[in-house]
Image (cartoon, rainbow, N blue to C red; front, side, top):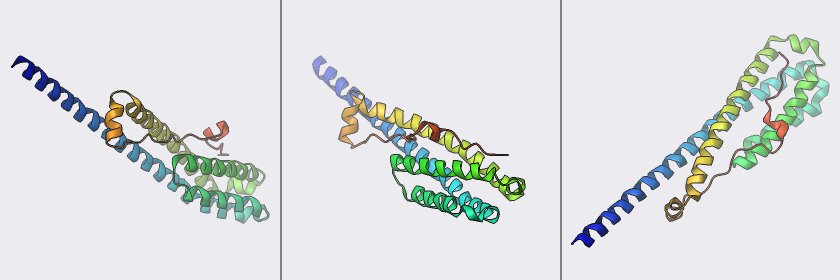
Length: 184
């Protein structure tokens, strides 16, 4: 009788722990998905600014067509990327193109005085800061999720319910980790 109660309590304990472990994994998976969507929203906001920025600069520096085209192509590649690692590589190219664009803009004093250009720069700088914060949150959540998935005995629950580790959203180049320095 005592052995039966002990076994019953043990089974109940394991079942309760399994439910807790499963719910914790679901919590982190949902949080990771939400964090990724936050990044996507912020990136879209920035991508939407780029055509306006290119059009504004075109008015002052039309002969910089190659650079403007490079920025536009980098934006298209960033829009098409889907996984965190692919998006990070595409974002690095876009970031490099934007660095070049702002470096060229410094050679045009009239452009630097244009109110629309200054507003676009300010909004882009704010977007970069928000993207950085969103990236940090996403990576922190992914770290927690991946740790939970890899830790014993939760890895047994994770494998049973097909929880998969997620990729970090890490930029491949150290310089790309900095927001573009804008002339304000």
